[in-house]
Length: 104
Image (cartoon, rainbow, N blue to C red):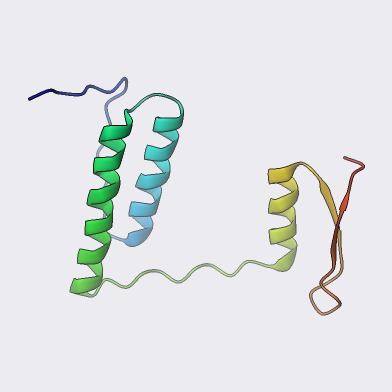
C-alpha cells in the first residue's frame, strides 16, 4: 500500500457541528491550492465529510441557520472580492447596481 505524506501534518479537529465540517473543507481546499496536500487525500477527506454531514442529519444534529447579512455587507464583500466600487441603490429602492470603473 502506497502512503501519501503531506508537507504539514493535518491537525486534529473536533467535528461536532456541520459548521466544523465546512471549516475543515475550507482548510483542505486551501492546502490543495498551496500544494500542502495532494488531491487524492483531499478527495478522500471531502467524501468522508459528506458522509459525516449525512450521519449528523440522521442522528438529528441540525444544520446551523446562516447568520443574517445586511445588504451593505454583501456589497462590501463584492467590492473587496472584485476590486471595484459598486454604486448601488438601497434595497427598498430599485436595487440597481452599476460598476464604477474608477477604483478607490
